[in-house]
Image (tube, rainbow, N blue to C red; front, side, top):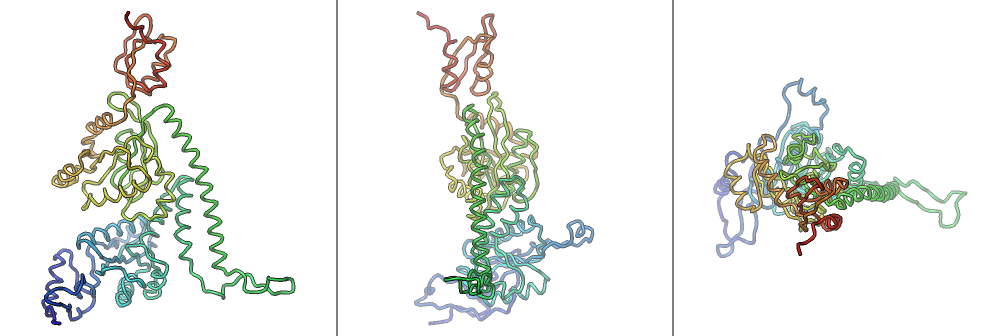
Length: 497
């Protein structure tokens, strides 16, 4: 067994792994780096010791405000947070992008990001997420910056949460709790609020902290008691869990009742044979801006994550005059908490029941392919894999042309647009027109003027090829569905003998 390298050589390798723009000084003096080699090969797939021993500061995450007037405008009492991530796979750039997204989530929740660090590990520590020694270093960063909250870029187990809090001595939350908090702030409709509340309770249930018998509430054994009533009774934490379970059951019933109302509306649209298009995509990709550009809907547009939580359905028209509905849906994000996917399943059914999905991706994002993969994972979860999809690469005016070319080469059914400037919108409308399912029956009929409703239905529910007004009535040639074709058949011209 020989030493693989001297400390100075290992430090150089550490510097090489992190380019100058991304590398930050380690928080502690490097341990003497070494690794075991057997016959010239590494002893297993291990990380360099220097990587495992260093919390790496990530530059450019701080959003601390300098101008006091700006501070006052932001209500002064923002939570001051330090971000911490564990880099297990991928490149240094992937790890930085992940922490930058966590910073954007924290900003959206109203926090003030003071610092961000990344720990290189093969897997998160089972006890404290980053390891006991690094947890102590993190506590020093918290004291140095004056932070009151630590946000971890992953979902922590109840044990990890408790142990890390015990070391850093401030509140610790994970990525899941942060996203749930943002959803709670942005939910506006009754159904949206109920779905968020259900997801929060599902998350909180295993994370309630109790202190055992000292919180016992119902003490039996008094004179008024009887057989089997003596003993500690139900502890406070047990009472809290029972109440949460009861509230969750009530919330599920309410959401099921609200789902019925939306199902009725959806069935009405199906009965009228109006095709439906769902806009899906990563959060802040520009879905609401695209909906406004296509329909003039006037939906809230905000440069923030999860600005849209409640689905918005609007009527739209193709260039050829065909009516269809366009639904804006909640944005997705990497590692979307499964509690949320489950709670918002009824809302996401708009995607599964549509005839076409406009999958919007931010062309100016550092890693748009990862956004596409994250959204498709959720689309699979809600059972919408069989729905045709057009990839709409938004923000083309701000994107790198090489990135646009790469995406359009990878995604065969794709188009580059800018919802802000209107670039590519006409081409997108034509593509929607071409991709929407067409009525199956082509029919010609001379409809009397007294039956004008049939002509109106042909315009609303079908595709009018030609229309001519004659003394006898409206000579109509159209593609329509079977039900309307049956109503028009009595007015079809008799076949020539």
